[in-house]
Image 1 (tube, rainbow, N blue to C red):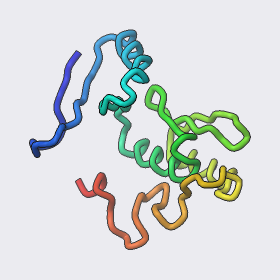
Image 2: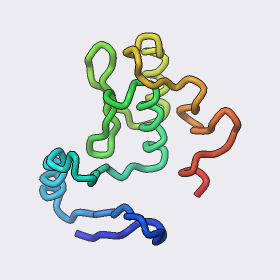
Image 3: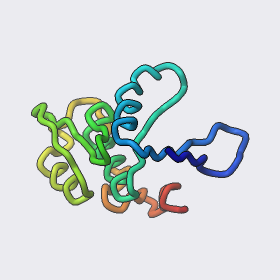
Image 4: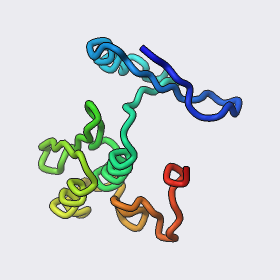
Length: 133
């Protein structure tokens, strides 16, 4: 296992990037992450930039509780209660067309005018903090 602290020292807790040598150990840690609720610790998968952007757009369109990641893939719980794995922004756009915001549950965040799922730019054209780096 290798471990690296990310970001510059700002006096605040910094994220750790952990790479497991054993898939079974990684899966064991991942399955037990629910025991961390309320502890202030959060485990999340490291996604490539395009998948991370697609994941954020999926959460905006389908809602935070309807989207999660599993083994580097984005999983979306659709309004018809089926699950779909997404691997690219193009697949997300296809699903967003198939399930427009009106068919998504009431109260769920939407793509609206916040950001395009492919460009992740705000209406003013500015890049997000993640893109600016």
